[in-house]
Amino acid sequence: MGNVGRGIVGGLVATAVMSALMLMKAAMGVLPQLDVIAMLAGMMGVSAVIAWVVHFMIGGIWGALFALGYGVIPGGGAVVKGMLVGVGAWLLMMVAVMPMAGAGFFGMQLGVMAPVMTLVLHIIFGAVMGLVYDKVGRTA
Image (cartoon, rainbow, N blue to C red; front, side, top):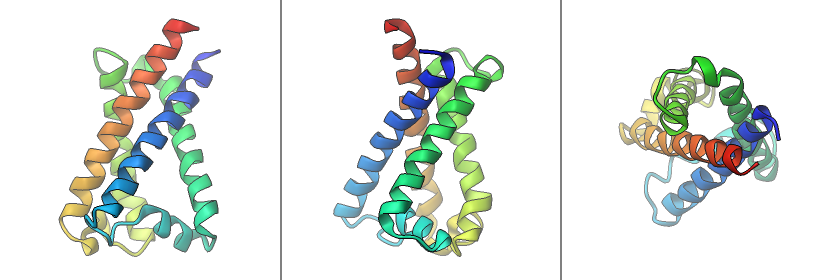
C-alpha cells in the first residue's frame, strides 16, 4: 500500500474513533447543541446518513493530505505530525465550516466549550491518524 493509501486508512480509522467519541458525548448529554452531523446535513440539505458518509470522506481526504504533506509537516514523528494536522483541520472548521453552519466564528454561538471540545476531538483525530499511518507502514 502506498503512502496515500496509508493516509486514507489512517484518516478513516481516526474518523471512526472521533465519531465514537462524538456519539459518547451526545449520549452523555454533553454539549448537545454541538452536533456536527446535523450541521453537515443542514448545510448540505441532505439526510444524516449522507452527512455521515461525507464526514468519513472528509476524514479520508485529511488522511490523504497528511500523507502527501508528510515530509514538510513539522514534528518528530507521525503522531505529532498528525496532531498538528488535526489542529489545522480544527482551525479550518472554526473559521469556515462553523460560520457556514450558522454557529458563528469558532462556533461561539454554541458556547465557549464548542471550540475547546472540537479542538480536543481534532487532536485525538490527528494522533490516531498519525499512529495508524505509521503502523500500517511498518506492517506493509
